[in-house]
Length: 235
Image (tube, rainbow, N blue to C red; front, side, top):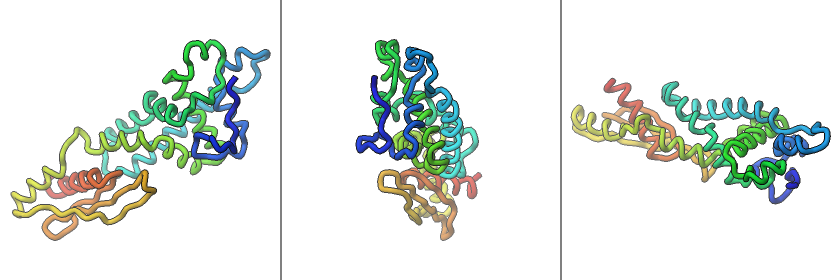
């Protein structure tokens, strides 16, 4: 049996310290573990998985809507689907070694349950719910964005410009034809920790601000600013 992870352990793989260790223990307990014990009355993580799915959806939706105010509903939905997919959640779970701490039954142990994408993704959703119940929505938001930081960066870098369009090149060509000059980009703000910075960029066209963009990289923010400028100047 793999014991539940102590909430105050220095080897804690999660960016959160639990006030109530029992809720973490429940999140790490698979139903196969409970079913093999007499009585089978101990809680397992399916209840928390159900709640965690909803909490994760809210946090990711809010994150994307705030970071990309100019993206369409369809583009935001595609980003969200990528981030909350089983593959993304399992990847994040492996990075924090979540499988190491799961309580599994013998059958799951023998079938390499600790490496199954579905089991890892479900367990991560359960842990997200555990943080929510233990510390509230803001704690769960910080936890989720921290655990999924790599997935957020990957997905947003890939999908930040829908269809892979190069808005900067299009804006440059338009400005050269219209004004015989190039657009100018200025970084107006940098926020967030070093590992997850966010950049706000203005693009100037013919002496005026024509677009604003935000992204996890300067290039991404410039693309978003160029897209807005094109929508305003050359619809």
